[in-house]
Image 1 (cartoon, one colour):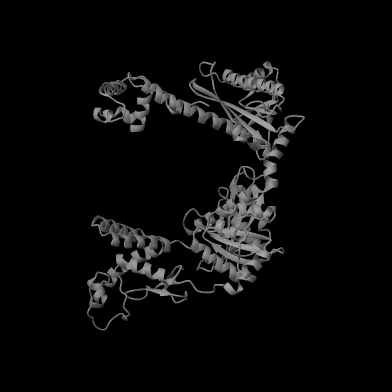
Image 2 (cartoon, helix red, strand yellow):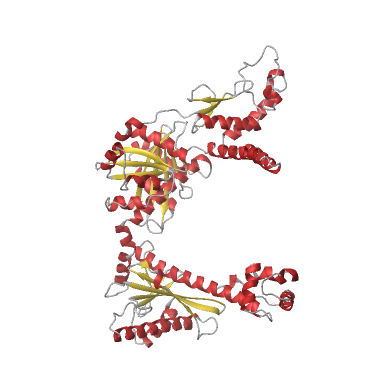
Length: 640
């Protein structure tokens, strides 16, 4: 279907939709929520509204009023279902009125006050002293779970009122091993209570006993080739795992909570708050904190809270936060109590359900930050805007459209390579990257290697420019003819001096600077003192990206060459093993180790191998195993 133009803001949100369960809230031009929906895959579901396709009249009417939308991410489809119900009840959107879902999700009820408790399905949670587990997605699913529990833990299912005046004859379930028959005195209350402790552990999330039983039964059935029965156990395992997902979007303790988490990208930060009221998650808000992406997340969250909760009416009874500075939890809790004028508990959970809530808030914070960063204004600030600011700081009289970064990588002087990466308008241009194998330098001489790389790069570039001008073509367009406006060298003053000499020797004059990694100091050719940029600024982030790309490209190229050279040099030492046999051996065995361990018979089975060549391989393998024989330089000795 063709893509319609809904405006920059909506188109960006549509393109950034995640493939995650969650809820979406459609809004009109006044910001009023007009529809709430849920989806297993938000990306597919929400996009369907904005495609040029036929919709029902009601959906067409709703779409015509959409000016914006928000999403809330969940971990599971069931969480999205519960959250959708809560949001509809809270906001009562116009287009949800006829579709609102006010049903009660089922629970498993367990009354431990009974002498021999039973598992029962309940539609409502009552204040009757019994324990309730859930809610679950449906009654049939609850019954499947209870049946599975009874296969592992024998429990009574009858309606007999205990204690009995006299014993009765056990039912068929006792004969099948599904009931301990307390009605006939075969099971005491103490024995039954021990069984119930296992049932409670399962219902509270520890279902290892049940899954172990089902998995063992499935394996035994498969070994007996009873595949249909094994498939039944497989389906039950799936049901148990699906039904025992912990519920996050709905709670039964009627709590009032705020859940705070933060996401950072090195430059900016996004704080997400999820609101739980009356035990139900009702939504959330996200807040952008510019230039806080590189700060300690605990410090950022604490500073945010002291500003956000200045009004006591906003402070809930319980607050869960992702992290705080060391020893700040009690101090912050005291301050919150003063603001509210009442009891407040502040916790930084490390495990359990509360920790899951924090992880959900963090997931939403990351999603909000990614969307914010994708907006045109932010992207320009971090790319072209950062390049322009960098040019001003370095004293350039023009915009550095093309920035090139260089790095050298080798292992103790062996397989030395150089890399050239290119950023155009502040963004990486991967097709413009170039890789160099050092040809004239012996040993680990990074200075001379850098000089060789730049000499070759500018020699090719200047020659291409001359040829293109003679042919009447524009200078740019060749492999090297588009010369840089600015060069970044990974290193300090010495590396910068060698690089500058190489370029000037060819008659070129390109501004360049070096970046020392230890303190991220910028060195300029005619300045003794380094330039130190604020680590929170987009321009330093850009410089670091160029440096890291040059480093990564050089390392990757060097490792590829080193691995190829290692394999070839080893096999080329074997007499009678030419290129075709080397390829055949590697295809057959996959590694040098496997070739060394191969027997004569397995070597002869390789295509193209004869007895003399196979014996040559065996002799090479024995020689490799001789004690005291030097081995190749290990990867840990790599230098970049």
